[in-house]
Amino acid sequence: MRRSVRDFAPTSVPREVIAECLRAAGTAPSGANQQPWRFVAVGDPEIKRRIRAAAEAEEREFYAHRAPEEWLQALAPLGTDADKPFLETAPWLIGIFYERFGVDPEGNKHKRYYPHESVGIATGMLIAALHRAGLATLTHTPSPMGFLNELLGRPKNEMAYLLLVVGHPAPACRVPDISKLALDEYVRFL
Image (cartoon, rainbow, N blue to C red):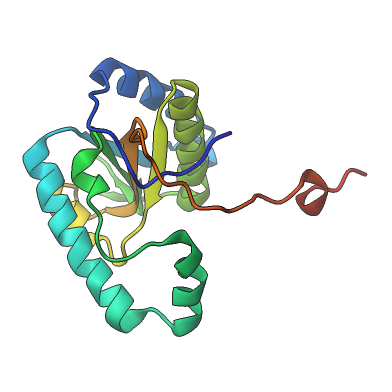
């Protein structure tokens, strides 16, 4: 029943609901228990406006110049384009980052083991927790996403992983007519 949506209602979502879902994400397993995930929950309208402006600039470049025609054809049934009003309408945006390396108090760098996989698991747990809380989500990945580091004040050892849009679906929310694979198409029991 979980679906991504692009039409969000401006209905507020209490900060504590978001915090509880982030607590669930923080219980994810990680390589060497290094917990390389970092989350920035954004509810401030001005910061969301700046994120939208920067994301749409990257998206315009993507749709006009960077995306191969095959990719644009794959996106066509979803009805996506460079306009991302949901980045301001949704009550919460969660910037998800991974540490490329750790930095101790003396400034020494430390290797992170399986940061992509670890953050991917934490992100999946976050999406599941948000869904369980009755909220809709959208994973948004404008490329490149370096603007998120700047706008959200993240250090150089962190890389943006994705931007998660969170809230309630709008009453007349459009959901693309897509299907998911049947269990026997992606699972094999031995």
